[in-house]
Length: 170
Ligand code: SF4
Image (cartoon, rainbow, N blue to C red; front, side):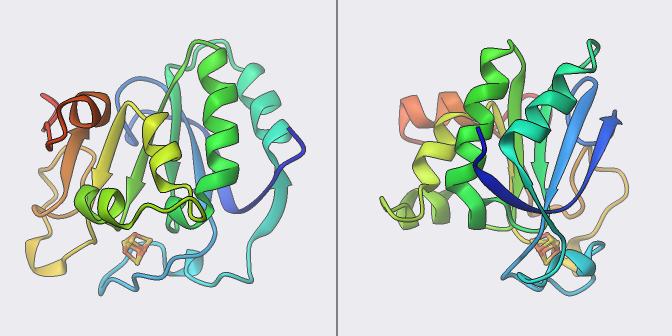
């Protein structure tokens, strides 16, 4: 539980970062550099601050109204191993965990290694909103997403059927 995370910040209660009432963890560091990114301050891998899984879990426990935790960024999959530890603790509380990623689902599945821990993190997620932000496909009408290429994926159904299953939230 004293596993370290490098974060850009958190939002303790959000209704715009996934279904329900959510605690949002913004990780620090992103390799994608999408044109028009809304969070350029999260790109550097040296900035932000260090905290622990324990601190985040305690903050989540203080709020009895939460539906779940959203991992955002930055790129959560650059810290997949500590976030897997976090996700397991959050799920023990009966809450769900979802993530945004600039990687597509297929990139994460095909690029998963023992070292990067991508599959282990995916295995803990209910939903994944995937793909880089593409400014030419930007839309303000999309639920939870910034651009039309991004998808809301039902991760558990996708893993069990070995195909991409979209969530009905799309
Ligand atoms: S993946 Fe997200 S945080 Fe990273 S550059 Fe693209 S929009 Fe910004």
